[in-house]
Length: 151
Image 1 (cartoon, rainbow, N blue to C red):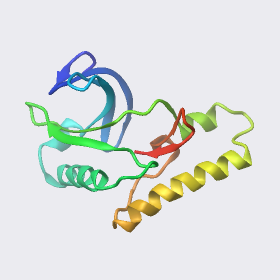
Image 2 (image 1 turned 90 degrees about the horizontal axis):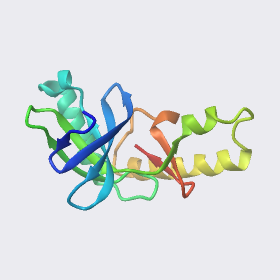
Image 3 (image 1 turned 120 degrees about the horizontal axis):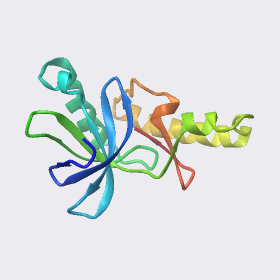
């Protein structure tokens, strides 16, 4: 996928992979900005429950507007039928990376601050009857502004 252009997104690098998709950093060639593209695996894009859940995830997340929740720009599919979500790209590191990079772990005040931000994002989602289903340190981004973004 690296180097390919999907719609108006040029794929630059792979960011991560999980059970419900692969995420790439891409350049939005129309708006000259970086985005994250999350692709539903090809074998799950052919229909059924996984595709419905993927579409539901995009619609639900796009209805949320909160500083601690990732912004969704669009959902689309490739010419060969692979579904993807275009979302905001955040500079920073995952909570997992942050924890693993420190032998002594996080300072108490930093852990409390991050926990409160994560909780605020989840509270906003819960108020809209949205349950995340995959909260883990690898899915929490700590941005350069030191704010967590749940993806």
